[in-house]
Image (tube, rainbow, N blue to C red; front, top):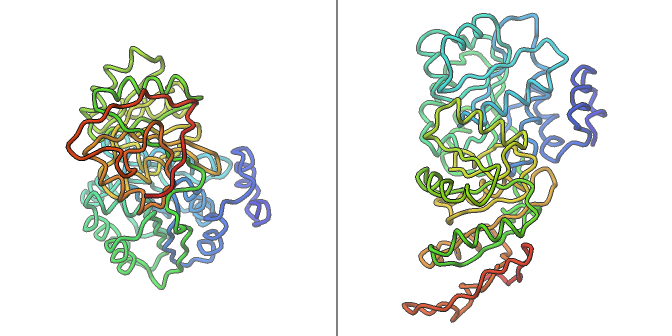
Amino acid sequence: MKFSELGIPSDILKSLETMGYEDMTPVQEAAYPIISDGHDLCALAETGSGKTAACAIPLIQKVDPELNAIQGLVIVPTRELCIQYVTEIQKISKKTNVIPFAVYGGFDKDIDIAKLKHGVHILVATPGRLLDYLYSGVLSFKHVKCAILDEADELLKVGFLEDIEFIMSCILHEHQTLLFSATMPEDIKTLAHDCLRDPKHISLITERKAPESIDHYFTYHHPKEKQAALVKYLNEEDVKQVLIFCNARHMVDKLFSSIRKDFEDVGYIHAGLSQDKRSSVFRQFKNMKIRYLLASDVAGRGLDFSHVSHVVNWSLPRGKELYTHRTGRTGRMGKKGKALTFITRHELSDLRELINRNKISPYWLGKDPLQKGSTPQGRKTRKRPFRPNRGMGKKVAKP
C-alpha cells in the first residue's frame, strides 16, 4: 500500500514525498490503522522495519497545534535514538505547525526548560531526563493523548521498569499507549499488561530471527591475528560504511588507536564520551563524513544508519539479543547487508547456541571450527591464511 492511499493531510504527505516515502513497510501498513483508530498497540517488529514513521505519522495527525501543551510522549532508551526519533518527526511535520522536541541527559537543562515553557506538542525523551523534569514540576502530562514506548525490551534491559511504570502513572487520564519491541521477554509482558488497555497485537517477527536481507559471515582467528584479518577484510570488501562493534569502551579505544593508521575517515563512539562529542560523531556518520565507525553497544539499538553496508563484531556479542540488534544496523528497509563476526576458541560454544537460536545460515571465511574434528580439544591447529575473496565464503549447513 502507498502512503498516498491513506488520506493523509497534504502537508504531511508532501513531507513524506520529499523524504522518499512512497510504499509502506509491513509494520507501517499493519500499525497505521490501529494507531489512527485510537487503539492501544503492542507490536513486535524487526529492527529497521520502519517503526518510527509508523508511529510518527498518525501521532502528528492527532496533535492540535492550537493547544500549547505536550500531546504526544515518546520514551526511548538512548540519547542517540532520542535524537534520531525527534529528527524523523521534525522532517515529517515540517510543513505543519506541530512542534516536536527531545530531552536527554548531557544537554543543557536551562535550554530544555526554556523550550518546554515556550511550547512543545510532541516530546521525545530518555527516562532519566524525563524523571528529572517530572520531579521538578517542569512537565505536565494532562493533555497527553498518546504515549509511545519504543525499543521497550532495551528500556527494561537497562533496568528502567520501575521508572517507566512511574512515568506512565503520571498520565492520570485515559490515553492511547503504543509499545514497540523486537522481543517479548516476561518483563515486556508485565509492562504491556500494566500500561496497555485492551491492546491490539501485531507481530512481524518471523521464526527466522535473522532478517533475510543480511548475510552472516564468521571467521575464526587467534586474538593476535584479528587486527590484520580485519584490515584485510575491509580493504577487500566494497564498504560503503561499516560499524565495528566492540564489547567494551576500552576495546573501542584500543582498536581505534591501532586501526586509524590503516584507514582514513575513522571515528569512534561510546558512553564514555561527552554528549556533545557523541552527537557530533553521530551526525558525521549519518552524513557520510565517517566511513569506519568503531562503537560500543550505544550504537547497537534502533539507530537508522541508511548507508551502512557492513557490520563487524570484533568479538561475539554478550547477551542473547545483542547480535540481532548490532547486525540490524545493516540490511535495513529492504537493502542487502553483510555482517562479519570474529570468533576465538573460547566463544565456540556460545556461537553454536547463537546460530541455532537465531536460525542463521552461516558463511565461513576460512575454515569452519564448528565442523566435527576441525579444532581438537586441547590441541593447537595450524590456521589457514585469511582470504575473504571479496566477502564470499563457503556456506555451510546449520550445525
